[in-house]
Structures are given as C-alpha cells and as structure tokens.
Length: 100
Image (tube, one colour):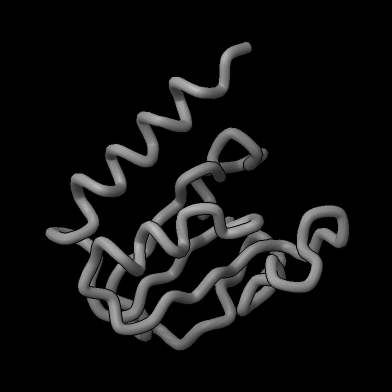
C-alpha cells in the first residue's frame, strides 16, 4: 500500500485548518510518536501541546514519550482543561470508537 498519498493529505489538512481551529491547549489523543507536533506548533495559535497515548514501549522511547498516558477509556485531565482535541490516527486502532 502506498502510504505517501494518505500522509500527504493529513499534513495538508493540518496545515489548512490549524491556524483557524487549533488554539489554546491542544490535546493530541493517540499521539504515538507525535509526528505532527512541530507542524501543529508552527501553524496554529496553540499555547500548549499535550501528547497522550496508551503506554507502548515499542514506539514511545526517549523524545517520543507522550506527556500523558491513558488507559483508553478515561482521559486523565480535568474537565474543560483543553481547548482543542485531535485524533489523527486513532479510530482505526480502537475496538470501541464510540466510547472515546
């Protein structure tokens, strides 16, 4: 499968909407290795980026370790503590996406 086209589409879409829709504290839910962090920070008005994912030693080492870990059900943040939430590559890995 060619991954170039879907990746290019994601980057272009983030660039297109970031300056308009991403502001304040942004939560990147299911951030993985945070491949879009720099792109988001450079193209938006966010004041803080929070990466959150389930613990997975395979791809979360050193610089790629998320700011927060979660159990896949309960987000460990206070209600209304973020302004923007994004899920870029999450739902296809979620057994019960309606529960997020």
